[in-house]
Image (tube, rainbow, N blue to C red):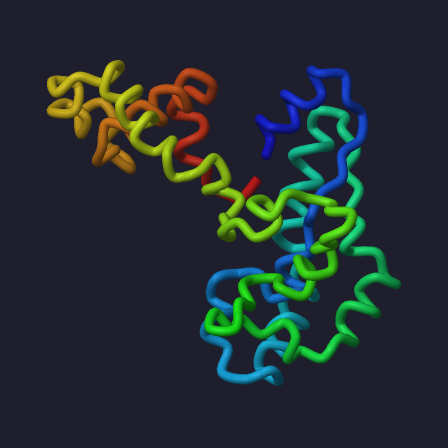
Length: 195
Protein backbone atom coordinates (compact mmCIF):
# COMPACT_ATOMS: atom_id res chain seq x y z
CA UNK A 1 0.00 0.00 0.00
CA UNK A 2 2.94 2.32 0.76
CA UNK A 3 4.34 1.88 -2.76
CA UNK A 4 0.91 2.18 -4.31
CA UNK A 5 0.33 5.47 -2.46
CA UNK A 6 3.69 6.77 -3.71
CA UNK A 7 2.76 5.93 -7.31
CA UNK A 8 -0.69 7.52 -6.99
CA UNK A 9 0.79 10.71 -5.51
CA UNK A 10 3.39 10.82 -8.33
CA UNK A 11 0.49 10.90 -10.79
CA UNK A 12 -0.68 14.15 -9.18
CA UNK A 13 -3.64 12.63 -7.34
CA UNK A 14 -4.36 14.18 -3.94
CA UNK A 15 -7.26 12.07 -2.68
CA UNK A 16 -8.34 8.44 -3.13
CA UNK A 17 -11.41 6.48 -2.13
CA UNK A 18 -10.59 3.29 -0.26
CA UNK A 19 -12.71 0.21 0.39
CA UNK A 20 -11.46 -0.17 3.96
CA UNK A 21 -14.14 -1.69 6.16
CA UNK A 22 -16.23 -3.47 3.54
CA UNK A 23 -14.77 -6.91 4.35
CA UNK A 24 -15.37 -6.40 8.04
CA UNK A 25 -18.93 -5.10 7.62
CA UNK A 26 -20.10 -7.60 4.99
CA UNK A 27 -18.16 -10.72 6.02
CA UNK A 28 -15.80 -10.53 3.07
CA UNK A 29 -12.85 -12.51 4.40
CA UNK A 30 -12.50 -16.06 3.15
CA UNK A 31 -12.72 -17.53 6.66
CA UNK A 32 -16.32 -16.28 6.84
CA UNK A 33 -17.12 -19.34 4.70
CA UNK A 34 -16.84 -21.28 7.95
CA UNK A 35 -19.37 -19.18 9.88
CA UNK A 36 -21.75 -21.76 11.40
CA UNK A 37 -24.74 -19.39 11.56
CA UNK A 38 -25.78 -15.79 11.12
CA UNK A 39 -25.36 -14.95 14.81
CA UNK A 40 -21.71 -16.00 14.82
CA UNK A 41 -21.10 -14.15 11.56
CA UNK A 42 -22.62 -10.99 13.04
CA UNK A 43 -20.59 -11.34 16.24
CA UNK A 44 -17.37 -11.69 14.24
CA UNK A 45 -18.15 -8.72 11.97
CA UNK A 46 -18.73 -6.57 15.06
CA UNK A 47 -15.38 -7.63 16.53
CA UNK A 48 -13.59 -6.95 13.24
CA UNK A 49 -15.11 -3.47 12.97
CA UNK A 50 -14.10 -2.61 16.53
CA UNK A 51 -10.47 -3.60 15.81
CA UNK A 52 -10.15 -1.85 12.43
CA UNK A 53 -8.40 1.18 13.90
CA UNK A 54 -5.61 -1.04 15.24
CA UNK A 55 -4.69 -2.72 11.95
CA UNK A 56 -6.09 -2.00 8.50
CA UNK A 57 -7.05 1.63 9.03
CA UNK A 58 -3.78 2.37 10.79
CA UNK A 59 -1.81 0.77 7.96
CA UNK A 60 -3.79 2.62 5.31
CA UNK A 61 -3.50 5.94 7.13
CA UNK A 62 0.26 5.64 7.60
CA UNK A 63 0.88 4.45 4.04
CA UNK A 64 -1.13 7.22 2.41
CA UNK A 65 -0.16 10.00 4.82
CA UNK A 66 3.52 9.25 4.25
CA UNK A 67 3.05 10.56 0.70
CA UNK A 68 0.63 13.37 1.50
CA UNK A 69 -2.23 11.41 -0.02
CA UNK A 70 -5.67 11.68 1.57
CA UNK A 71 -7.71 8.47 1.77
CA UNK A 72 -11.49 8.64 2.17
CA UNK A 73 -13.28 5.59 3.55
CA UNK A 74 -16.99 5.70 2.66
CA UNK A 75 -17.71 2.25 4.13
CA UNK A 76 -16.66 3.58 7.53
CA UNK A 77 -19.14 6.45 7.56
CA UNK A 78 -21.09 6.10 10.82
CA UNK A 79 -24.49 6.27 9.13
CA UNK A 80 -23.43 3.68 6.55
CA UNK A 81 -22.14 1.34 9.26
CA UNK A 82 -25.42 1.68 11.18
CA UNK A 83 -27.47 0.81 8.09
CA UNK A 84 -25.17 -2.03 6.98
CA UNK A 85 -25.00 -3.61 10.42
CA UNK A 86 -28.81 -3.51 10.69
CA UNK A 87 -29.07 -5.78 7.63
CA UNK A 88 -30.12 -9.31 8.59
CA UNK A 89 -26.81 -11.21 8.84
CA UNK A 90 -28.45 -14.05 6.91
CA UNK A 91 -27.98 -11.89 3.79
CA UNK A 92 -24.25 -11.72 4.54
CA UNK A 93 -23.83 -15.49 4.88
CA UNK A 94 -21.67 -17.08 2.20
CA UNK A 95 -23.73 -19.75 0.43
CA UNK A 96 -21.89 -20.95 -2.69
CA UNK A 97 -24.75 -23.30 -3.61
CA UNK A 98 -27.08 -20.30 -3.90
CA UNK A 99 -24.53 -18.07 -5.62
CA UNK A 100 -23.85 -16.06 -2.46
CA UNK A 101 -20.13 -15.32 -2.44
CA UNK A 102 -18.17 -13.00 -0.15
CA UNK A 103 -19.86 -9.60 0.30
CA UNK A 104 -22.79 -10.88 -1.75
CA UNK A 105 -25.28 -8.32 -0.42
CA UNK A 106 -22.91 -5.46 -1.33
CA UNK A 107 -22.21 -6.89 -4.78
CA UNK A 108 -25.94 -7.38 -5.36
CA UNK A 109 -26.56 -3.72 -4.53
CA UNK A 110 -24.38 -2.78 -7.53
CA UNK A 111 -25.83 -5.41 -9.87
CA UNK A 112 -28.14 -3.32 -12.04
CA UNK A 113 -29.04 -4.95 -15.37
CA UNK A 114 -30.35 -1.75 -17.01
CA UNK A 115 -27.56 0.58 -15.88
CA UNK A 116 -24.61 -1.56 -14.77
CA UNK A 117 -22.17 0.12 -12.41
CA UNK A 118 -19.48 -2.48 -13.08
CA UNK A 119 -18.95 -5.30 -15.57
CA UNK A 120 -20.10 -8.66 -14.15
CA UNK A 121 -16.59 -10.15 -14.36
CA UNK A 122 -15.38 -7.45 -11.95
CA UNK A 123 -18.48 -7.33 -9.77
CA UNK A 124 -18.40 -11.07 -9.09
CA UNK A 125 -14.67 -11.80 -9.30
CA UNK A 126 -12.94 -13.98 -6.73
CA UNK A 127 -12.01 -12.32 -3.46
CA UNK A 128 -8.30 -11.49 -3.17
CA UNK A 129 -6.46 -10.43 -0.06
CA UNK A 130 -4.84 -7.03 -0.40
CA UNK A 131 -1.43 -8.68 -0.22
CA UNK A 132 -2.41 -11.00 -3.10
CA UNK A 133 -4.13 -8.30 -5.14
CA UNK A 134 -1.60 -8.43 -7.96
CA UNK A 135 -3.08 -11.80 -8.87
CA UNK A 136 -1.71 -15.28 -8.88
CA UNK A 137 -0.25 -14.98 -12.38
CA UNK A 138 2.45 -12.63 -11.11
CA UNK A 139 3.91 -15.14 -8.67
CA UNK A 140 5.79 -17.11 -11.32
CA UNK A 141 7.01 -13.86 -12.87
CA UNK A 142 8.34 -12.64 -9.52
CA UNK A 143 10.11 -15.94 -8.91
CA UNK A 144 11.68 -15.86 -12.38
CA UNK A 145 12.80 -12.25 -11.87
CA UNK A 146 14.39 -13.14 -8.52
CA UNK A 147 16.15 -16.15 -10.09
CA UNK A 148 17.81 -13.80 -12.60
CA UNK A 149 19.32 -11.77 -9.75
CA UNK A 150 20.14 -14.49 -7.22
CA UNK A 151 22.53 -17.27 -8.21
CA UNK A 152 22.76 -20.76 -6.75
CA UNK A 153 26.12 -19.77 -5.24
CA UNK A 154 24.49 -16.81 -3.50
CA UNK A 155 21.89 -19.17 -2.02
CA UNK A 156 24.65 -21.51 -0.79
CA UNK A 157 26.20 -18.58 1.09
CA UNK A 158 22.90 -17.11 2.28
CA UNK A 159 23.41 -18.27 5.87
CA UNK A 160 26.76 -16.44 6.05
CA UNK A 161 25.50 -13.27 4.37
CA UNK A 162 22.23 -13.15 6.32
CA UNK A 163 22.72 -15.15 9.55
CA UNK A 164 19.52 -13.75 11.07
CA UNK A 165 16.27 -14.67 9.30
CA UNK A 166 18.18 -16.36 6.49
CA UNK A 167 16.14 -16.34 3.25
CA UNK A 168 15.11 -19.86 2.21
CA UNK A 169 14.26 -19.05 -1.43
CA UNK A 170 15.73 -16.96 -4.23
CA UNK A 171 12.67 -14.77 -4.09
CA UNK A 172 13.17 -14.21 -0.36
CA UNK A 173 16.87 -13.52 -0.91
CA UNK A 174 16.08 -10.96 -3.59
CA UNK A 175 13.60 -9.13 -1.34
CA UNK A 176 16.18 -9.19 1.45
CA UNK A 177 18.78 -7.62 -0.87
CA UNK A 178 16.37 -4.80 -1.66
CA UNK A 179 15.52 -4.31 2.02
CA UNK A 180 19.20 -4.24 3.02
CA UNK A 181 19.93 -1.63 0.37
CA UNK A 182 17.48 0.78 1.99
CA UNK A 183 17.85 -0.34 5.60
CA UNK A 184 21.41 -1.60 6.08
CA UNK A 185 22.42 -3.80 8.98
CA UNK A 186 22.90 -3.80 11.86
CA UNK A 187 20.74 -0.81 12.78
CA UNK A 188 17.39 -2.20 11.65
CA UNK A 189 18.03 -5.78 12.64
CA UNK A 190 18.84 -5.47 16.31
CA UNK A 191 16.34 -3.08 17.78
CA UNK A 192 16.21 -3.61 21.53
CA UNK A 193 12.88 -1.85 22.01
CA UNK A 194 9.84 -1.30 19.83
CA UNK A 195 10.03 1.92 17.87
